[in-house]
Length: 195
Image (cartoon, rainbow, N blue to C red; front, side, top):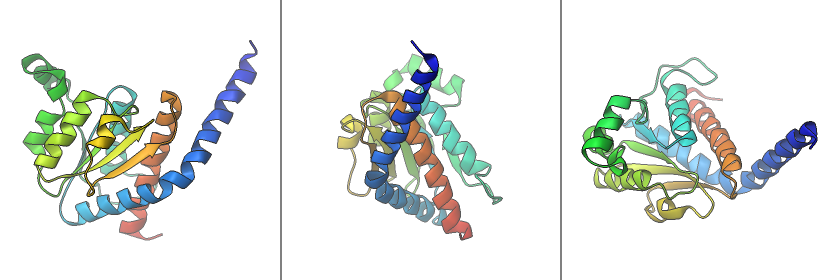
């Protein structure tokens, strides 16, 4: 096995996936960014959640909103529900892991807030449950999914936005999710600060 050629193949596969996704995702990414800005201007906040690599993506998004993306600006209220180990393990122990994000959304989510729900398969029970609770709290949802959108895609309302990566490989979906997060950050800054 030639490792250099394997690396080139992975790069090519990633580029191909992003190129294929560009046409499908440009409009929903723009719609999601407008939803975020509208929510922020109305005094709302953004809660984000995911598992594994998607948890890291949720935290990455929150960090870029709270701190900065590529330009200086005041911090924006965005919180990853994946970061407090004591809360996550208490909820998982006392209730069920399926409730680890839902209980947090129920406690701190308010009407007008947004939930950024990330699941490559769309079938993470704790993410779907968080969306159910968010809807009950009159929150809108932005879902980053892949494959066929799974149960998460099917749980969304016409008020929500799904950004579904047209791919099946988890790594490729996650790569497009990260690019999507960077697009969202850029579009939020552009709307708030100008081009």
